[in-house]
Length: 450
Image (cartoon, rainbow, N blue to C red):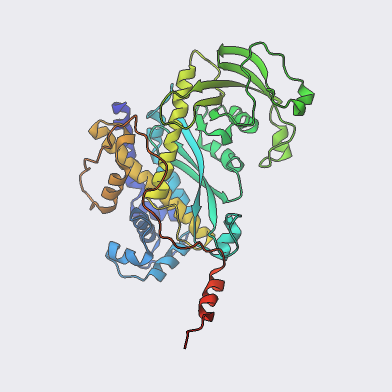
């Protein structure tokens, strides 16, 4: 894999240098219809400062003049970011993704297929009326006592960890309502891997219509029966089949591996229109696979997958299980975005500002990933063992022209098991269950004793 990686990285370096040059950024702004007058904080300088801010942990705007060695106020910088169109940052992310295409097309293929990981998460942001209207807050929090939270849906390349695209939606929405918008990012033959939220009839049918493949964990509400030659369920009485499989058995590929036919549900999902749902086929042929998890420390002991990869000779059940195990890398990728880079809590106070912030986070994340891939090639270790934090530190502090560093290689600990709990205790302050204005007035109403 080192030769394809080396050649792909050479192409990426050439394209990336052109993409981030000032004149290239100016032309990008012109292509997006942005017009500006020359000033200290023009679009090119603003983009560079925005990237610098995210590289340093989404630091305060007042810290940027010290980092950049320039003289401007935090208010002027915020106004410059507001003038910068969101379309420019999204186009820059798209150019960066296109520059990385040699990597995603050749590195980390699974049985000759490009493989992608999809998952959702949430990000918090300041409590402003505009953000509350746009995204909403958790329903168990009283008005004025919580923060708006946006749902994000991210698409990562499994072999390199590069972030292809990130989508946002209000908090009270499901990942399935946006996942179809990620399908144009894929090519026929690609494999999309996700958790049980994505293994629905409608989603699998949309993937099959585009020539894509899916490997997802089976929904807990669907009954899976591996009995060979079982009679097909009555097509028009499926709502009464409580506790029984609703699929038609076709052929067996193993004791817990089979090909079945799913029937189209009567009611369309809420994220599809009636016309879109009517265009889907009445039946869908899928593969159901169940396997045991024998590794100590795993919470789940048995996993059932649904996939569109029907050929058992080309895709053995063990290979499918190994592919789904790689899905857990998306949790690490999201942790790098939210914890290491600081995307867990955003700083902008407007909806457009939040979307710009997320776009720059994606750009910076991919730049760090490219540094890790280069170090992986030079140091001869898998990219997942290169320290993301060390690559981020070098990228944020290295002067121009600095030679590529030798980054920290994380130890290989396949049997490591850690509890999901915190040792350090938090401060014992009560939670805010009333608006700040009410609590502040209560303090003011307290009389000082004579």
